[in-house]
Image 1 (tube, helix red, strand yellow):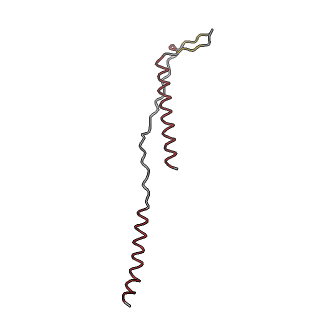
Image 2: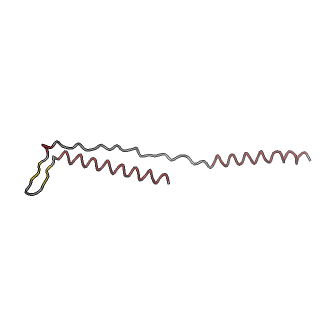
Image 3: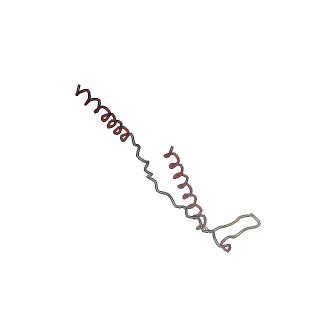
Length: 92
């Protein structure tokens, strides 16, 4: 009779312990983002005297350094788009 009484008292304790361990084992860790947030540096626009416009051909000439700044800006924008894409798909 006492064995049954002890078993009745022990059963809820064991059940609570097992359920606690199962709930703790199912915890999903938060995702770690391995890519850093890229920085965007906006290009510096040239002074008006650097720009020349040919009215006959409707051609605008800009210095090479300006076009290099545009290329760097485009690379930065692409990096931001990739970062945001990865961020969006890791949250889903």
